[in-house]
Image (cartoon, rainbow, N blue to C red):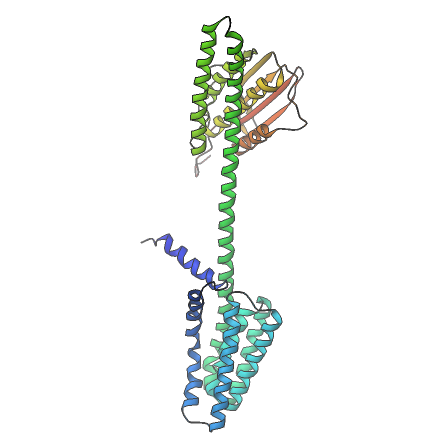
Length: 397
């Protein structure tokens, strides 16, 4: 049975919180609950102190040493599960832990050998990985040197625990660090996706409103000129303006919701209307062959027609515009090519505008290309996109 993804996310969040500073008392308590079970190795020293095996002075000194050891250990581990201490402070506290462990074992006996487990854990959790890889074996060697002198059976029984628990803590550290990095990466991906969606919406609105508002402006001027002498024709232009406005509203709504798919045949028909309304002689194909053309390619080429014709109408001052739709066989496969050429003087500005920049991004995303520049008698834009559907995954050649 598949586990609920929300459970995995909650676990990851708890793990990340272990690697960050405690923000509330509840998080501080959670960190303590994670640390406290590891204090099980203090059971032997506590039993030794409460068993009456030492003099009153030695027992008091033992309790003082044990409390100091636990305090230093908790300080090192608890702080390094969040906002880490400075490296010099960490090194000093680890040295204190090691000295206390050696001193208490040599003075009070083999029951205190478990303290070396905490020294190894502290080295694994707080030191840089390179330092951990040599300080953990060094701690194990010191443990063996003291343990073989005080209690050989206990020493041989704990030697692997001291060694492996330190290395396991380095693994926990790397797991927490990796989880934090993954959380940050996921946040970055979400931000990039949001930015991409904003760019998509900006491109769509630019293309939609630039074309529609240009057509509305042209028809409004035309209606104004016809109004005194030809009211019937002016009324027809006003009706066209209403239709274009309604369609623009629909297109904007669809672009905002992300469902709009531009159709090349529809854009060619719209280009014919826009060019004619602007008084430009238009040569536009009516029924291009779009069989088997991928939707993404068709949509990108449709936006190319819209952007190019909008620029012709608004900026070129052209008297004639020719639109061609061709299929070409290239080394990359069959491509559908759309060219828009006019005999005008071209637009203003030294570089590509937002429309051409967004259009190039659309075509590149669909696997196509864009060329735009001065032609022999005007300006020419050529957009290409794959005409064949992508091969099915796992299909044989």
